[in-house]
Amino acid sequence: MRTLLGPNGCPWDREQTLESLRQYVIEEAHEVVDAIDRGTPEMLREELGDLLLQVVFQAALTERKGWFDIDGVVDAICDKLVRRHPWVFGDEDVTGASGAVDGWEAIKLEEKKDRGALSGVPLALPGLLRAVRIGEKASAVGYDWPDAGGPRAKIDEELAELDDAAMAQDRAALEHELGDLLFALATYGRKQGLDPEAALRKSLNRFSERFRRCERAAQTAGKGLRDYSDEELDVLWEQAKAAERA
Image 1 (cartoon, rainbow, N blue to C red):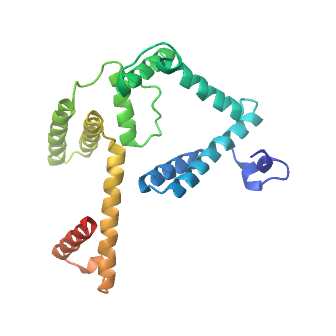
Image 2 (tube, rainbow, N blue to C red):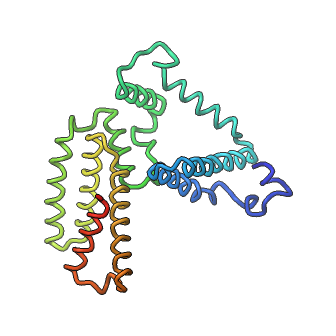
């Protein structure tokens, strides 16, 4: 990286800043997630390398600013891991994974007690993921339902309010209630031990694959999807689902 940023390095790399690299950090992180979902080892290795490049790239830029270098990044995370695992590196005890999470959050909260419980949740996170993280942070300080029954009842409540807003044709209220419903759904998933972001991503992948099957079937028949009636599109969709199950 230092060579790429050097006097005889790459013109594009030398023009980059911390701000210009932000989009690539997000893009590469999503590509890592995509590789995990696809279950392809070679693809995952490549995407992890691309994400690592972003860390090294930014550390090289901060080194030039006199802030810290890549060793400083590694030292900081190593120190944090030791500090927040006293049941591994110290003499404390925890029970199970949930106990470890509670212990981690308690230490983190103490370290950042002046910043508020929700301060560590990035605003730039995807909405469902941010909803889960906010719920986790609130739960760590006791602000949560005891089980999944609470958010499940909330889903019915928010859905009824969404219907009321739709009947009143109040777009501002409709947006408000839709957001509340999505938050309740994310919370329900969290209380069930599910990742709502991953669940939605898998659902979108299923829809996309079925949609592509319908497109291919239409193309084979020399048609486009717009040439089909609603009933015929339903038949295509059911055929795509059946092919998927097979």
